[in-house]
Length: 581
Image (cartoon, rainbow, N blue to C red; front, side, top):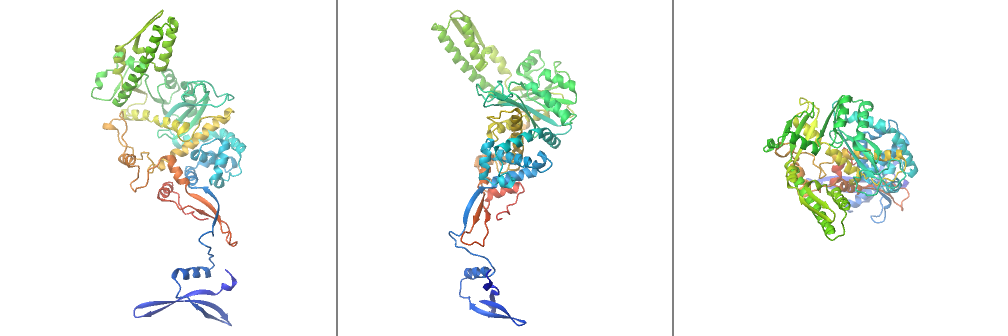
């Protein structure tokens, strides 16, 4: 405030006349004369509009006013809302303390990389470029971090992985817990990493080396541990490491391991029995189900009016066998088989034409062509073939097709958990919880977090990269749970069709309404996880100044959140009171 304004104020003189109150607004100056304080009226401002008088009143108090246009200059803008939300979730989870109990530079960089992975997964170099368009480096104090420092922090994280996983296990696993375990792979760009090898390529990338990794989750699907293996490692060979980790590193004496039929084989289960303290839930292979039918241990006629039953077999001593019949799965298998049979016949017709034209005569080469067809479709078992020199014919084996069709929709779960502990329904639902691992792999590999493609050359870097992605999924899992009401995700899972755990779970009424209308009950749009992050990214932190008035220091101004953004923040217990700084 200028010195000449000291003592000036706007006085509101009120007078009543015939039940009415009249206001007179006088600009006055107070001054001291001897020991007395006197008032001097300078001007009568009653005639001025109310808004003008309010401006004069605030100006006399020291407020500075600038022209409406051209007065404020925005010098820089950064996306802020999505960073603020994910960072708050990390704080809620105690992620920093989980990574390392004491503040340090490496911990800040790793947390910033995890947040960046959730928001915009890119290479490490691209991450250092991208995050400067957001408030992330400012909030995390990593603005000066370069690519080399990110790599150094990853090396530091790799050494911390055992301790971090042990903390996650203490949070989300306990004695008697269900532990889900599944294996996947991702292709590798390059040829200089010792982990990269040719193997069963789930990404369908021909000619690409790959790595294999096994993910451990709890019954809710929360990731607890991830381990990387060479790309030619079979699924079954990874199980022993997980058992050792659960027993010795996580100190869990008893747990129930859930794994798919290709992983928990008969030999592997025999090893679990020898180890002790381990129960399991898995499924039988199709060939094993077929043997039970042939031996009479499984009567298919029992399932004409039921879809779930327990049986026993001397081939599986001490185990419960839960037979499930899913009509929807039966329809899918029938459709798939018909499509594969048709595709196989088309290829067999091509071989017939080549033989008939004389282009293919040698029986050995005819057999090789037939083998290539079977490798693609696995349907040769349903055909009869006649192969001779310059001759080839085939016919469908209807008996084989009918026998296989009789088992459509059937699958058998095997478990060692006593019925007193786990009723039949719980065994089925526990095995189905493995779908959470499949969802995690989809998220890790491409939907959101993008593990692949992998460019790191050093083995430890590859391992820490995969672990970093798992920690990012850990944060995303909790974000999705908190935001389920705003997303297409079902926050209130419904019951199963006809009350049977074998049949697909029904979506809740609220989820069906969201899917049908694409809006919430208040009319705001339903989001996917990524579009909600994009919505939050529209909250921008503006750095501004008033160039014409030097007395006003630079300041920041944050976009006022809309209704959807307010909801997202509230669900994370995050206030929106930081509009100005």
